Length: 342
Image (cartoon, rainbow, N blue to C red; front, side):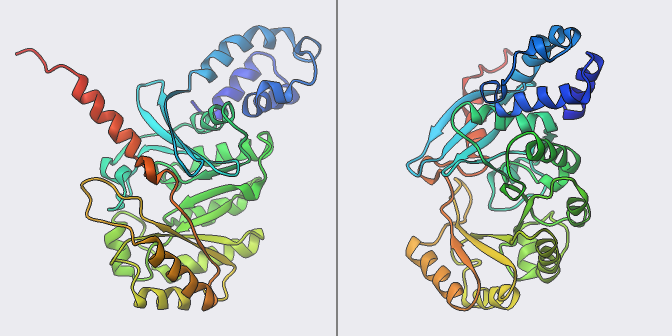
């Protein structure tokens, strides 16, 4: 379901623009937060009569399947969609939420569990917002990061529609809506034109163009220098520093040559480099460096003029890397399914 479809149903039920905004805001923020007057005094009768069916449909967009709390304060949530597919959201410390934008992903990052499944289907804009609605039933959410399963640039219309609603009726500041992408020219064309301009996070992972093609085999063929130039332009236009994501892979992108390349690319930029030690995935050969090694890299880069933050990937103690919960649930389902009769 798309948000545009919800709006159309509201209009067909007699909603004027002010009623439409009220109902959507009530859904996104939660009824207890937005009910400041009796609907009987505000909404037309035809709309009041149509609301129970619409609210039931909205509640069915995503259902909580399981919760996986971590010692770092995060909670990984496995959600079921109406067609039986599953996705993941992550409640982060300090009132953040990471949401999924696709079931699966077509980019095929070689170190990512989600990338191994390929793209299964797009997630509708209403399904994206439903992840926020569900998460807010557990704790406050004041920041939403589009960094879960999927590549937001490959579902751009739906993601931007969700961002617009969250940034206008969802009580989330525009700089606290973070669009994460491997890099796609359409992102740099479309994001500056929208009524809500999110912060931007670019998955860099290496300064070596050839290595980046190996690590992100189906990402657009943009050289790291080109990606950084486009990111810098967006950051200057919006007033939000660009975030560069760097998953630290032991022995692959943590060499002295890579660190020198980072300094050449990012020193003096309006940017933050997020170093994220890899969250290990079974059956993949990649490993994360020790925390001491990661901390030394962050100190070195910071000392050479690159604003660097060392991030802990949420849920490492529960093996909650992107796509792992979904893959685990799929394996359990397959194991519980009896073989077909011969």
